[in-house]
Image (cartoon, rainbow, N blue to C red; front, side):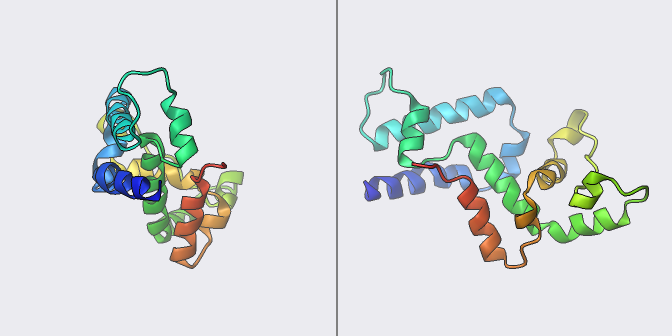
Length: 157
């Protein structure tokens, strides 16, 4: 089974992860669904499951610990947001106005997401930064922060 997981992660998820930050945030829901369908076909191929069956791919992914495309997107955004944390801390310090709960937590103001600006990586990173737990935001060790982000996506078996 371990060899099958290595094959899946190298063969299928390697293609998804390569440049994921460049294209996953700007995909529409329909495009993400098509990509998830392709990933599900890869799971079926690696695990020797029949092409057409009533097997729930969500339960198969959870059973074997494979991430969905939406989870890969969120994980990559969280890792990139953590890498840009110095900019977000600076943005939070330079924000004028009263002290609010969000400002006290370290949140940054949401960017304008109308039109094309909503599909940019910078606006997706700002929104994702506000979703990061405080323990990850304030972690100084990047290796430990990466571990905490990955751990948050591990399935409880």
